[in-house]
Length: 173
Length: 192
Image (cartoon, rainbow over all chains, first blue to last red):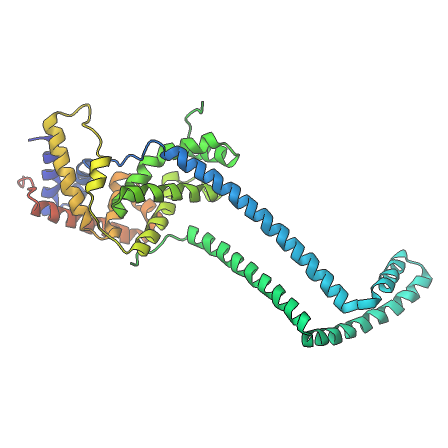
């Protein structure tokens, strides 16, 4: 009788007699009979190459997403400023620059500028209401919202993949 | 030439951009990963694909690995998630292992006689067939414990289960395997 049968008989005997610790110890040598499944020779190189390619792809996508986000923010800011201040942008910038210089005269001007800003804020509300009624503005807003929605979906997917990675899957077939 | 070193050092080198270090790490765990996946999905080609995906995913999240812990336990959790996803998609639990044993069987061991090798193959066949009848979770804990050498605590971390549940799974899996092997003609030793 060979050693594999001896190991097996010992294990089965322990199981039959409910000697749990002995059975646990005896099962290891029995399980060693199972062969290790060797991967194909190119497996390691292929896996490493795939890992590096995935990293390059990830970096490229991250860069692209960052550039797109930056462009979106700049465009949205420009549209907001243009919509809010319309033709007053130049005089208001001049007033802001003067206020920054710190002279007494400019302090008074700054007061006037404050009034101008208040007026601009009121104007913004009016412009926004008008923009909502304009079909072109509605289309532009829809596009911006779609882009924002896509960005949110991508962010959600990224976060979900992170959660997926950190949480072991439950058995549920 | 890359000097063999610890898993934690290899991870550190790989994070610093060393492809050779990650190559060494993959080479170290390639057999274990493919064996583990093959025992669960019962298909050698799919097992290789899943193992490769696991190495790709592990590399992407390498910075989250805690060097204080065993790399194998961390890596097997990545692999476990991929395997469970695959099984859910395919809804398969057992298929033939013929291809797996035909291609994956190692040759006779240097220190074993032909009779010994024959007996080992016979036992391996019986075990493979018995494993096919086990629930996936039982099969996985058995492979992680007895083939990959993980502790109960580490297996609990891999599977996201309480230690008590892992112990229960191991106990039941062993009992079921014993019953299946006995039914297949393997006899227990006489009581002392």
